[in-house]
Image (cartoon, rainbow, N blue to C red):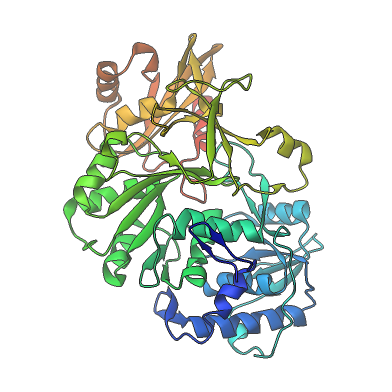
Length: 498
């Protein structure tokens, strides 16, 4: 059996083997609304799903696409894919039909599995409608479990696309298993008595990873369809959730409700913030309002988690995104590839055993993403003298105002400290041959631009103060919950043109 426990690594290389260990267990593995599924039920439904896929003409090592929201069908399709050694492509269900067809045309899966109403035209991909009732009525007969190499492609996912066109990344079965243990189970000490909440889309790498944690660890996962602040808080309170990993914008959205003390969050033993960093003020507030461990982590889809910090233990490092995980090396490099000294800002480069296999059918793009064994993240940051990592923002969003570099995160953290501000993003636009900063924000009430401008002049250097402040009801997000800066740039250009 393949087990990662401390330094011991055994020989099991497939996800389904972990389920085999639990196939007789009546313990609850998943809760979807008012529906619960034991490990025994998940095992039987996985076998039925595999039989259905075989009956539809799917063959071992075929490539299939999955078009599901957070649902039992998604998990069962993934587990059945592992049984049959299939390559899976989760697709964002929020995309338009034209965008879905474009993905199918580019990645060319043989089949598309879905429980949604969709018709396929102008594509060679065959549609298979797969819902829970159909699966339950399937045959529970023995399936020949295929032999898979641990390095064979298993998951073809995409980057978040918050700064550029999403790129398809390839992950092997062994890498997916290692990521689950080293970046969740071992890192946050997951036990079978834990209750995990999954509130990010399963078609994204984080939600995908979290949805399989029960299979590996024996814990229970409570799955919610989509993230809504009050729904998340209610579920944590009622279901006694002990572990949650959220993106920073989601944590920011629950803060107003936590302040009011309307929900009992005493069951939480660990809350993790991923994606872009929270401000120092927000982190301090979380630590003061909650009694659980509060972690900040940093990573990318290509590398998985790179660094982590328990801010309750390392409060003096509250602006850090953590210390590199075991066996992970981080270097800060300049534009010529030279390693920089502590406190010097440069590109974050990562050497990790959890690295992806490459971008699908993009050999040159994959090569350009590496400097030797180090993956070039496109993120800017620095290391302190103690080896802790500090994130400064995306390399693509480092703006030169006049001749001086401005990190939008520095400006955003100040604006977010203004009373009543809920969200903020600063982008740079070209106007008259110069880069000018535009601050977008949402707030509990209307906040005048003149007030914010005056506040920024008190807290920031003159060149850091935005040229314009634009209040929106809500800032646009991508499917993971990250603020979509490209959408804000487009919004400003269209607004000015009008």
